Image (cartoon, rainbow, N blue to C red; front, side, top):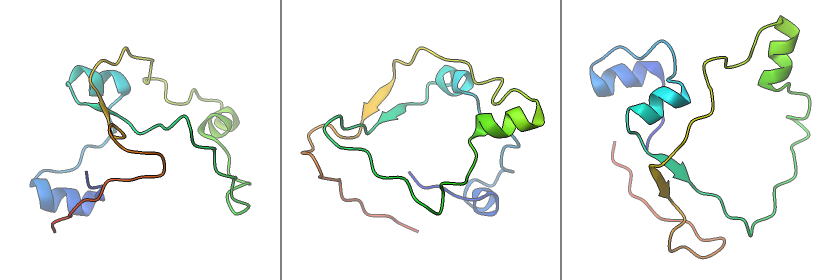
Length: 99
């Protein structure tokens, strides 16, 4: 998987980038997989002092008196790809990336 910005998106796909991200419901309905990389054995990382002052999406919405992510209702997910399958704790997969 590669993340690209809107300029790169158009160069890679030949199409204009979508103006809005899909909701969880739209993503699920399209049959796209959800990815699981959770390791219950690992301890959470400490928070960053540099990011400590950032506000959450919910806090920003409250300030603006709007509902955050109104169209992002919970969905029942069945197509889950476990990215940690077969890996030991603290082990990651290697990958080759092609430009």
